[in-house]
Image (cartoon, rainbow, N blue to C red; front, side, top):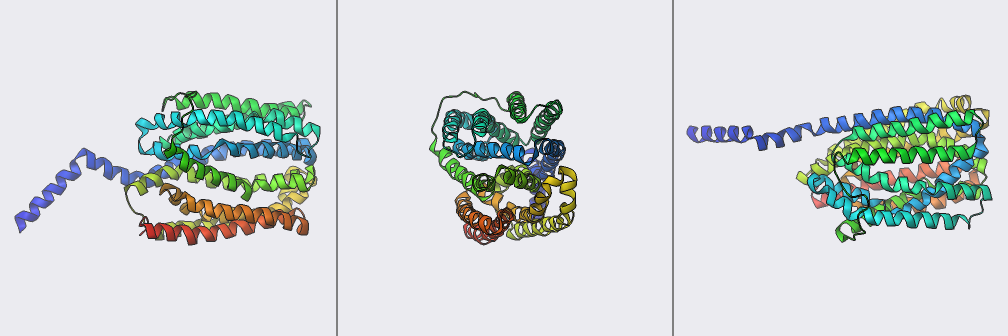
Length: 441
């Protein structure tokens, strides 16, 4: 019996000394560290770029005033609407498949890039055509025509981002993000101080984005080489989940960003400018939330690819996010009424009132993040699609009703209700589905 036990121990010792098993053991131990490293790169890049962005945001908003800043936001949101035609879910699909085998990731990229290029041209055409049927002034329509080329930038950069995420080289995302903001903010401050106006801001934005797009291309090819102008290829295995992810993005637009578009149609450019300032500030929290998700998503994919995860751990992390962010939002709400007009000017006093309510939606948005990543990593995105569909319908209806009843602050009330309902649905649906499928124990 003793000899048998000694043989077993020796066998286990030899297995653990084997380089293959040592690598697996090391990979398992390093997952939290890698995740923290990825988040650190993204968080630092986001912190620096957002600090630069906030400086520029304050200066641009003050120099343009609520009306012109409202036009800038209206044009940006209108063009963004047509980016929904780009089948953005291709990025997530490529990331999910590419993370499993980096050596063959270029194949996944080339299978989808041709289709994306065709969709970019179609989206620009539809955007420009649709602008002529809007109630906007001629000047705003001309700005939309100019800024529609922004669709090229947003259509391509996602593919580069998928490469950085799959290879876990998050530093490139941070470096390019900071470079982009330095260019835009620095040039905007320079030209606005010389007396240039809104047209200059749009041109500077396009120049900054296309310059960083070029840098993205150069950096990404050091990691994975692929043909940016590959032919159109239809792969059902990529296309089917991509459509679901794209629908999620499309409906996600209706749960938040459509607020500004609806205000531009129901209210005035000044209303858009006032709400736009509050929304941009609150959105910083959601940007950090999205960066955290981007850093941990490849790790979630690899973790569930190996086996099950403890369900209680996901719940604890979700509650930690909810309580922590809600407490931070409460403290921030005590100061924004005085801080916003002091920074942006007295003409933005109404923005402070909106922000004191809107800021709480970040807590509900962060609470569901762990379950959302787990669902996408296990091919359960269709259930997220159901939740986002409910959010989209509820948000559009409540926006209209609450805007007519409460005015501009009603849009913030609508957002809070929508994200609270979404957090509950994520807990109830995703947890139960993954538990039944055996992904959670």
